[in-house]
Length: 388
Image 1 (spheres, rainbow, N blue to C red):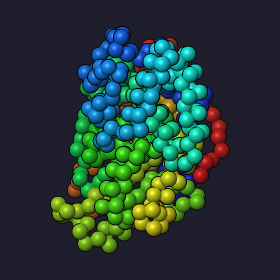
Image 2 (image 1 turned 30 degrees about the horizontal axis):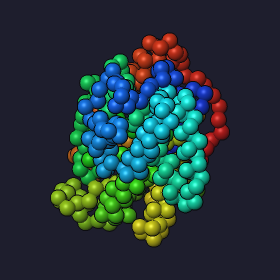
Image 3 (image 1 turned 90 degrees about the horizontal axis):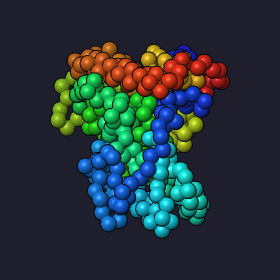
């Protein structure tokens, strides 16, 4: 979840939703049980295959949630471990709400097991991969038959897909949604709107700590070249440029980059960090480390944006009114590119309008759910120190 600071100049920052007040509707939902072959779910997902070992996650199911990568091997491994634990303990898996958090007797036993496994991993990279894969595996199993795969809202009650209108983005721009595993399948996440509106080729999900996802993103960035990769995560310790300065400098330096793009033209890549403020620092550090391993320097170019307040503030507050969500970050970027002469003919205003509409639709769906559940929709004001 990206956010904007209204210091001079306005810059993007990442900040967490309030621990005391965020739209986490898993609290509204009854516990969910994972059904093994000996029992049957009232809602059947055709992408879930019933095998002798239990339910398996298929490539079709995985990519149905917005991914473009192959099915992550580590996720498959953890799902199998969960199934084996269920069989050996004869205790059925159950999840609290839509987020895939294991609970009950099975949750207690699995918690001890996974903590021991994590501690036994001496390598920090292996620990991260295990952590990320476990988070995602639990969310995938816990969300089956409950959340819509496209909009990540309860399928039968709140699905908003029919109200979201796709809009193809000019091929010279590509967004990368670098998402923390704890934001994967969150109902109030706005990063998902980018690929729902623009398509997965223009807005691609990359899950932090998932090797298959990160490999795809970095292969694309290597092909594009360092000068065509930017991150929307500036802070006081990072040198930033405005969109105009960063992009126009690249255009003037690249003879291919003009208003008559060739088929061989490499797109401009913008990485949006989609996670809470507390998680974003580690995510940005990982990006810098990879930048160094790929190009020999830690300096991942960052840009600052001038943007307004997202309508999502009405329901999902940030630490201050000058910060906003991931979708609003993309909207702000497209708005600033649209006014540049080099981009004015690509119709970016149409994608802006489509994304703004999708944010409004999401806000409407989440508001309706809260009202139906008898929960307050009043934004709780709170104070916090400026985070840079």
